[in-house]
Image (cartoon, rainbow, N blue to C red; front, side):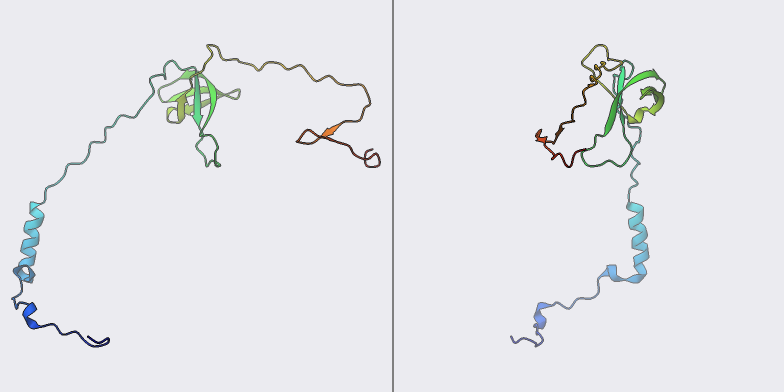
Length: 155
């Protein structure tokens, strides 16, 4: 065998046969019609699937609300917790930062709290005492080191 030459195959490898019957164009339409009639029609799938709803809906006092927006990486999916003011069939009315907000139950998740009563207000911190001294403010950096500026730069 030399590169670039044609291959010769002996004729005994191929049997001389006539064209098969399925190749006949006159009977093709009849066979196609018979084949299509033999196909079975499949029934459509039933779409009556029941969506999951938590059993805690009637008793939950606080909820999480899903944020339906494009999120940054590692940003929480749900905001919350928010107090439930009242419930309707498909909508919960929640106290959303002091405003009543109607939220669809599709965006909600019940919140389970450790405490029996949720604190309604934050504990009051005592105000920082105001010093009447006229001392220079000490500047610290993140590593909690004090920064000593030369006197000519501080006014």
